Length: 193
Length: 193
DNA sequence: TGTCTCCGTTACGTATGCGTATCGTAATGT
DNA sequence: ACATTACGATACGCATACGTAACGGAGACA
Image (cartoon, rainbow over all chains, first blue to last red; front, side, top):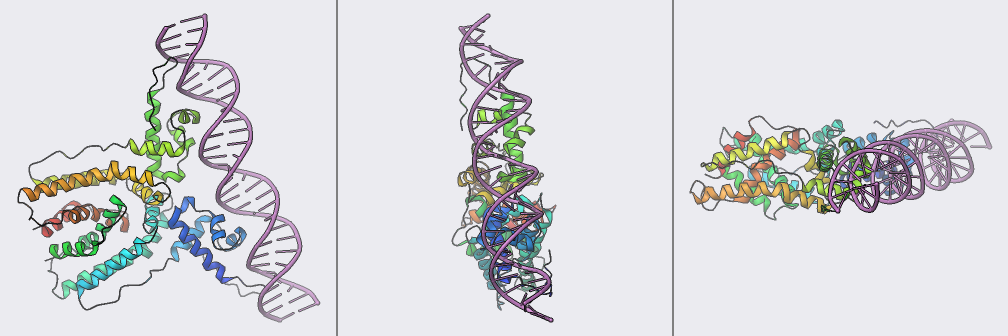
């Protein structure tokens, strides 16, 4: 849904409301998922009434899609010289973004609602998951180019293992060990000797 | 919820209905999640009416809990002499159980509904996730005991990596590479040399 | 001032779903 | 046969939520 800024006369849209609504929708998607998210509660959380939401997005699906599309990739890891420490800081960043309350809920929502709203899942993957994968893949390749990682290394599997250990720990126990980054890094180094 | 079989007189419970209801509930939990699951649709799918469901379980929460509790761990991997091939067949089994339609949806449901129904998530972990982790952990330890894996190996991280690569691939792309087991095994062997 | 559009308030109609109740009928044990 | 219990069919009250409509007031521009 594209909100076209009509330059016609009349009272202008409250742009603060736009952001407030989107942010409330993002929170609720992560907290309770798409099914449990209600326009009413989103509007209330944004300090707005229901019709105001419908003036901007024409349905609940539309709002959810806009909320996912507006998800910001908060901060790409700053580049460092050492490939391995760059990978580690990427993992730290990954952990921070997922360890917030309900950080994993959004992923659960995507997995669950995938059958019902495939576009929503695809959008989430494109916006959130893929960029990180790309960054990690680039780092491993850089390591190969610099000779820090052997030539024939399986980069895709290494990337999957790097973030997969987090998923596995969380799914199994609901938490991730404090020294997760270190242990995962150690395993990767051993595998890519 | 424990359905105590009263031996009193009267028409006996249709035990086929019990199973049909539970199975329908399991399917719906995986298909659409707890929030979207309705007693009405479960009853319909089980060829039963709503009151019949409520005669057995006193609420929707109760039914969902029973459905999760009744999830069968289908077949533990048959023991083999070679530790590594035992691990591999465990991975194959893991893949098969999750690659069915909506196989990952149940995990999404748990992640999403964790905040709302912690007992349900805990039950799922205890019944489904933990047993596999235990089996894999035991296999790695067996490998250490037999000298096939070095003494100080980080078993917990290895287990997390073994199944974590599956999660990572699926979350990122909605699918898992055909040769996932081989590549993951190769990485594990390299890491635990 | 006039005209436009947004906003909040309130209300409406519709749909869905939970949990309960009633009633006639079917299936058991005594 | 009789009491007892489960079953299907149907309905009810209640709550939630979607999406729309009508109204008066507020903010902008000409």
